[in-house]
Length: 82
Figure 1 (tube, rainbow, N blue to C red):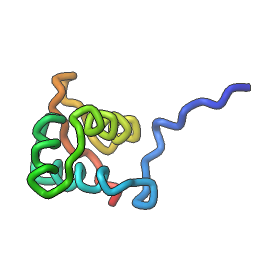
Figure 2 (figure 1 turned 180 degrees about the vertical axis):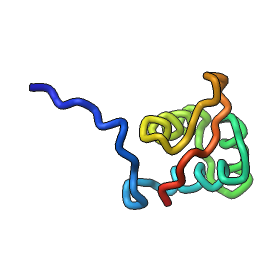
Figure 3 (figure 1 turned 180 degrees about the horizontal axis):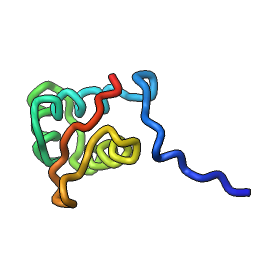
């Protein structure tokens, strides 16, 4: 029997990497696109690609911590697992 992904369960602090924590910090200040998050992380000294930010946002969305507002690519914090 194949395992089903557990997308409804939230993450806990130990499940997060440093980039996840920084993304959550950016989103705690307001809504943002992956590019805006990338730029904010760069301003804070963390250089990551927009694609990597998008991957991390997707993971956070799968666990109901962020929301892609109306499918626009603008993300908002829903539940902060830190």
